Amino acid sequence: MVAAGDRTQGEAQQGQPVDALAARVALAQKLARTAGSKARRFFLRPEALHPELKSSSQDLVSEADRTVETWLRAAIGRHFPQDGIVGEEEAATRGTSGYVWVVDPIDGTMPFLVGQPNWCVSIGLAHEGRPVGGAIYAPMLRELYWAMEGAGAYLNGRRLVMNPDWTLASTTIGFGATQKATPEEVGEFVEGLYREGGVLFRIGSGALMLAYVAANRIAGYYDPMLYCWDCWAGAALIREAGGEASFAGDLANPGPIWAGNARVHADLKRLSGA
Ligand code: 2AM
Ligand code: CA
Image (cartoon, rainbow, N blue to C red; front, side, top):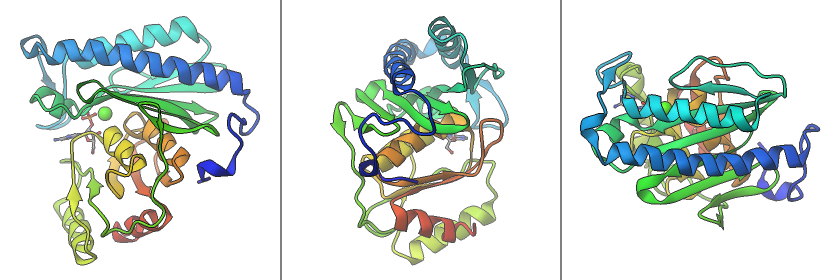
């Protein structure tokens, strides 16, 4: 991963025109805000949500997730019909431009459904398979995060720069294991973390926990299995804030993710047995 300061503002990587990416990042911010307002209206009227189980007793989808993703897909298609879209609730669509939008209409569906404010809309951008930007909006927290390759990462207009000196023990560490993780792997990771002075943090949204890493609110994040829509925008934020985020999945497959400054990133990999 490359530190934000290593590049000129707005400089394009691997040949994609800056204007093409900037136009998409600007739209991602606008769509994240509008989608967040739509989701917020559902949040404030929980009787209209009709939640259904997906893969397990704590993996749910609601009317809000579906409505917001359908709206996001239509809006992206109107502006950039040549781009691909990968999202949590509908099948992926292929594009021809090299850009793919990676959308999660509500990351943190469980917190959303039980009335916690810690959920967000996450919109990532991939170019030829790499994270190049994105926007995360948490409506109940009134926080808009965005990042663009070469231009930095921002929270409500303030530039984010990760603390390069933090260790595992400096402040809490996000851990995203769901019911899909085995008790043994959870136990081993937590035991190792606490042996080294770490303390766990979890808010039920991988996207928001990654944004918190970029904002120096937690020192790192490890999740044994995330999908691209949970982490694409967050990974772009962390890279642009000077940190490291490595996702072992891709646009088609889930995988683990490790994130933090260089030292914490390496320590989380070691503790997870990677
Ligand atoms: P979601 O909103 O798509 O369900 C973190 O490991 C990820 O797991 C989150 O991004 C969240 O994505 C999901 N998650 C959050 N709380 C969960 C829970 N209680 N059970 C299963 N998945 C959860
Ligand atoms: Ca999600």
